[in-house]
Length: 56
Image 1 (tube, rainbow, N blue to C red):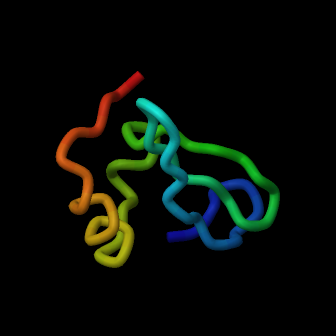
Image 2 (tube, rainbow, N blue to C red; image 1 turned 135 degrees about the vertical axis):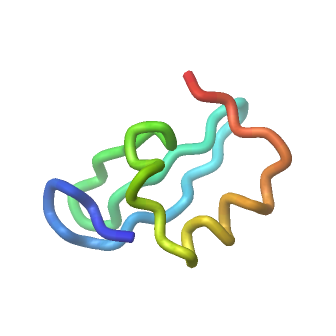
């Protein structure tokens, strides 16, 4: 999945009580619900490993 700002790859960033998607280029973080409609199969597969994702 690509960053909306710079086009670089987004990776799953997991912290205590948070799961976000962070850009490897500009460092911008997206909440899951902000990009849910754009998720690709690879990113969805990574997110499926987490039993609960809290939308904060």
